Image (cartoon, rainbow over all chains, first blue to last red):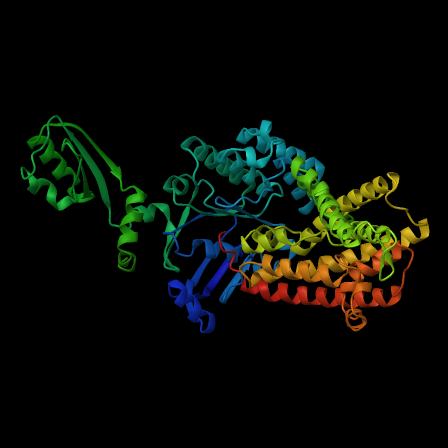
Length: 336
Length: 270
């Protein structure tokens, strides 16, 4: 088996902060006696990433996704455990290691605000020692794909969020990195811009076969880009596997929706729906049920026979629903 | 390796150039930066000393006539422009706001970036200082010294600016521990103003205090460089060694602080 690009073994990180009681008295007492509080941000994390993989790192806010990203890129030092990326310890921040990775932060600009993006790109060209020929070629190609060629000479602070994000992506890919970390790259963007950026990342990955780790709150990002998902809950790894398996994590249930020509009275025919976690529309002309594959046929035909059904559709369990269910009941993961 | 050296020089040079673009990005700001200190100089110091001398052209205070006092302060202004213009707000803000994350990822170090920015800032300050110097001498407010004296004075002042930078860098990297470093910088600036002779020439201080101060970097920051420009240079070698010593001390402390700070760094707000 190929040597993994990223190898993480029992990685942990804890932060120490100081507790302060509210008010002036609290400030005064904490001035003399500090109460340290240790927060375990990442606990005992283990996984490998191979060349060419795109991995979605998902979890609720504060679960430890960004802490992991910071450790991967060498911004913070792990408290314990082993971490090797491209054969280096990230936190030693060897310059050769830094030339091979890239980080895009959706919530934080890495471009300089007061100058046009092109000036930042020229700076990065020298930092990463990219030849003029490669630089010009990549700027032209990426600018075209993202539709921002006209904006390269405008001050970054005058760009819209979507335009700026595209520039951030360009900046991080100028040096053709082998491993790319994308921390919520589509956050706050409209649907068109989100789609544009996803397509761009997909295209870039296909052409360069780099490894990508992406964190996002948008399931569309994950569905469009990732082969493999890693879930993180409260600093611990909850799930690590393919997207298909993830969708089946709550059993082989399907989502079935029925539309009726008239409202179905509450109480009437409840026996048909109650076992399948029904979600009714407000006017009670539509219902969504969660049905396991074995019962699907029989139940559907009964409903169609007994009630005025005008439309009917089945779908896989959307991963948003799976995620939400798991966030509310993390113990479901252990039951697997 | 020459190619590696060449690549490094290019990294420094592009950083300097981009810093110029950043410094001059806001035209009004840049303009105010140039005329701001001049206004302070002309209105505050000129008025202060002219009221002290009360128009008495024969009066001398510790050997300074009114004209000499104004000359002293014109040179103080020039020296401050070149040697003490640099602040470390950007640096401590970068740490406090979690912006150093970017520098930790780029293959160009944080200290290299800030030193290159400082060099670029220095070039602008030297430009402003030269413009001011030639304007005031052209208008007849100041007699320029010989080329030799000017050369020694400029070299000395540039050397001091390096010390000033390492000291500012020190107050900047303390941001790893302190939430706000501006109060520290303001205190340091005020102490420097008083102890370096930027407000009152050291000749007006008690001799024992001047003797003590001569072991600190302060008098070499303003007072002695002014004396060089005024053709009364003294303590030149002693000053060089003292400043060199303090520069090395601060550079070493900065290095240690960075090493320790970066392990504590949590990249908050990233």
